[in-house]
Length: 324
Image (tube, rainbow, N blue to C red; front, side):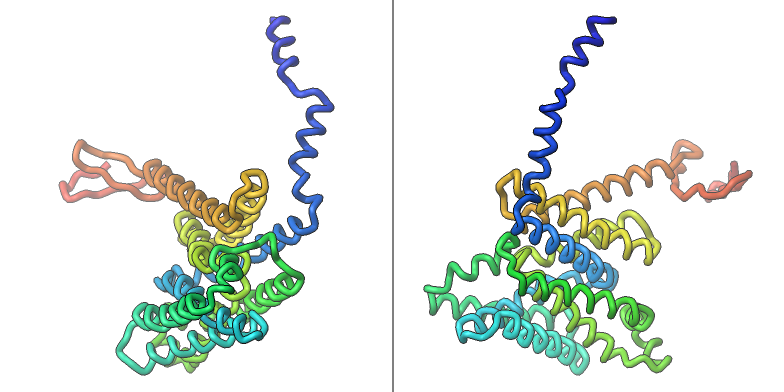
């Protein structure tokens, strides 16, 4: 027994080794650029998780993907023309959001079709301009795949501003937004200007995409918006709990992805998205295990599931007429 205890003690790290290990874990935070990247990833993860709930519940997961492609065209145009990146992307994104809403409202066309046409056209314009001006190709790699380590003070300020505006909009327009998203006709009866609410929501989404694009990348931003929301949806059916869970999952996956990318020497945006995918996998597994736990059999061929949240005796009736 004493020999076994001595063996276990010998395997434990010494005080110096523990300090070195802790120092290596904290090493990334000694660099200012990494600290800024961590802050940006937390803000982006949180705001994407928050917006993702409304997008997923409305069944409009495609809009995040489409909007990121639309603003890409505006970013390319503004860069080549010598304008500010955010100015061109914002104008292009807001115009795209307005066109999508107008096409959907005035014509018998579903939102996904309008998104596909408008946003793909914007992306195609960007690709066309890049192909004719090849000297700018390298400058747009960060836009496509993200470059969170290259975040500037201006990028950080824009992301913080968009995060505050998004939180303000969700907090003060939550009831009208929910009413419009889930029961548009009834909302109109109660005097809610649903067209304006939808337009504001699209503009806020465009702003979130624009602010997140330089850190996560055009090709990955849709997953950053959707993954936390669908993970939260697997965990709860309560709307407010889903909003909180999605925001927290977005923050955690962004932080862990950014932190891990330092040691893995991998692309930050891709690592963040993969952590988001892993979160969805864990949430799905949890939901499946919970369903199995709530499922039981009464007879050989009679099997059902339901939550057991009550106490005392209860009665289950089946087609056979038997009860237990």
